[in-house]
Image (cartoon, rainbow over all chains, first blue to last red; front, side, top):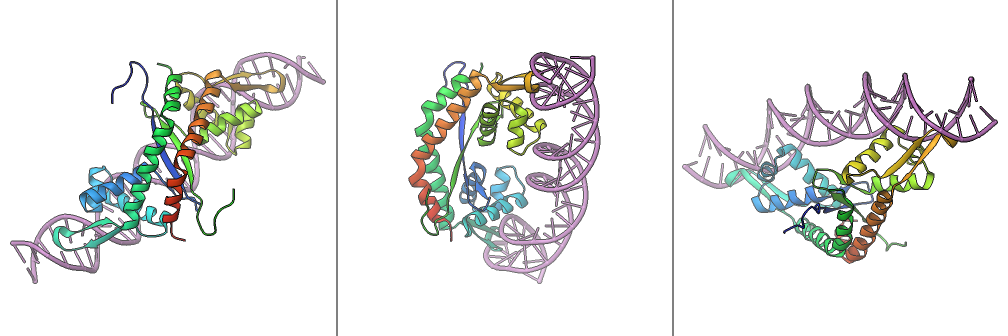
Length: 120
Length: 120
DNA sequence: GTGCGTTATATCCGACCGGACATAGCGCTA
DNA sequence: TAGCGCTATGTCCGGTCGGATATAACGCAC
């Protein structure tokens, strides 16, 4: 990931807007990935520097965007419980990441042209 | 622009993040286009339902993202003055719209797969 | 059965953002 | 020269969002 001297790096992020005014962006996707990686909403929130309250409400919002839950959570038990992605949840992450890489590949030349516009 | 029965429409929006924490999204680009179309920041703001104050500060923010001004404005004169895009400003709009169409073309099949995930 | 960490939810508060309003300067036009 | 509309900028206020905190329930481990 080297960069040419003086040419600024531009990062392209995608946001998917649904009909009902909700949307999905990179933050929510990263949260889902962290939940999958750590096995709990609380641990995912901690690693991303957000409160459990916020992490939970984001998960809620994603579920409402999709019309179905994206995580299954269980309180109590070993380690206090935990959470993992539903099939729809991990499919959502996969779709988003594929969208991202496809878009990146299709736009990198124009993105470089845009980067050249920026004063340095 | 027909849609299959029951399949929700997803809109893909791009956001370009620069190194200094600033970014450019569809709202700012539409504002620039409105300025080009109407010949003034004030008129552009009115057609987009925002105050002159806000329109002007957005223009300012875009300029700081790019490191150079995106509009040239002149107070006084016929009609009170006006504003138009600089060369960098219209190049920015062109780049963004091209990014958008390229990304749209490259992702529409995956986007359809994502749309199928959404409960109806 | 006590303890622990997590889920789930309510409430309160401060920070931030945008909207509303105010003001000053500018230059053509009538 | 008076007026108009736009640029440019400051200030204040209210709504919204996130952070902090509190509480209850749950179920395994010890």
